[in-house]
Amino acid sequence: MQKLFEEVGSLDRRCYQTYHLSEDVLMEHAANAMAEYIKARFPKGVRVLAVCGSGNNGADAMACARILHGDYKVKILHAKPPKSHMAILQAKRAEALGVPTCQGLEPCDVLIDALVGTGFDGAFPPELQTLLQNAASFNSFVLACDIPSGLRKNGTHAKETLKADATITMGALKTSLFSDAAKEVVGEISVANLGIARSFYEGESNRFLLDLQDMQLPYREAKSTHKGSFGHLALALGEKSGAGILSAKAALRFGAGLVSLVGYEQKEIPHTIMYSHELPKNATALALGMGLGNEFSDEEIDTFLDNTLPLIADADIFGMPKVLELLKRKNIVLTPHPKEFTSLLKQTQLADVSVEELQNNRFFYAELFSKNYPDAVLLLKGANVIIAGEGRSYVNPHGKPSLAKGGSGDVLSGMIGALLAQGYTPLQAALSASLAHAKLAQNYRGADFSLTPEELIEGLKEL
Image 1 (tube, rainbow, N blue to C red):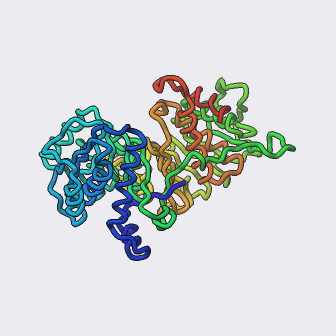
Image 2: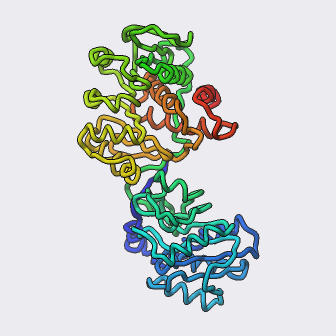
């Protein structure tokens, strides 16, 4: 698990004031990190073009060009004249060493994108739009310095943003790198050491990036056990019964000792899943919403929820007024996709926003909801899943496009329900199930368009 930061300027200043590290020292380490990345991946003699803006982002790339000069065919393109103190200084150093400059884009093997940094907002002027559009037509490896130029603080980006093959971000991970939109442009992300360990550079944060190693699977370590030792998930079987059945099968495969579908009309279900017209007395967790439709009356839902059991709520329930009653529960995980979350925000009167507005500000609205409903755990689905609960936010960046298929979310809900039934806290269940869900997609060896919910469930045995 790694910390995320909305801004790192304050962290840089702390280095100057507390550790007596100058801006120049930090910049040399940033430049060296990029140079070492290039040296490790490209042979000497390849063409490297540093496309530099007028500020410190450009200065980082100028310093990198200076370090590589002599071993690589390096050129600097000043897309804008150096303006900041460090940009002027680094330009002088590069010139003194004889690093050549060019007046426009030239063919290269590696293009260092250092046009603008984290202060970018709005849109590029026409000349820079043209520059980036032309750069995109090159068949170059693009290395973004700190962030891809055009990526805004909220994670949205200008349409001309150059798609990076890799981003080396300076000192610490920025939240903006892990928006859904950013996933299209950041490439492989790594963090440059700026002269001190990250544990000293970084301060406190309530945002975290999840690693797959943070996943806690429900391995059965006790020897003397029975099916009741591993919980009993009761799942409301709704109008679209396939969704509920997928969830139930996932829950059973993910370690729940017993899984019961609860409904009022007899339906054909797998023989491994139990069926009941009422809530089993030994249930240890509930699941509600997957394919719910209009199958249950409000009274029947009330009967299902007349307890204090931990609950996973998904899908159709977010469009029903009944969701406001669910939010009074103490142990609940909510797993909406963006459209469902806009409905939830509206029903709770926290915000009335479009899906586009939500997607442009995912962290803001997830944390707004979590602040107002601190007893709930929110799992906001997306290319980079956000999980908010207990005063913290977590990002799961490990999902794959192969998960974008009907039924994948039902499998995730069943997995969360299985962990709740086995005694995980709502936050633990959401974190570990989300990571396991992503790992299943990573493990799949077929074409990415071919992954089905059934194959996700089958893949659980290989985790």
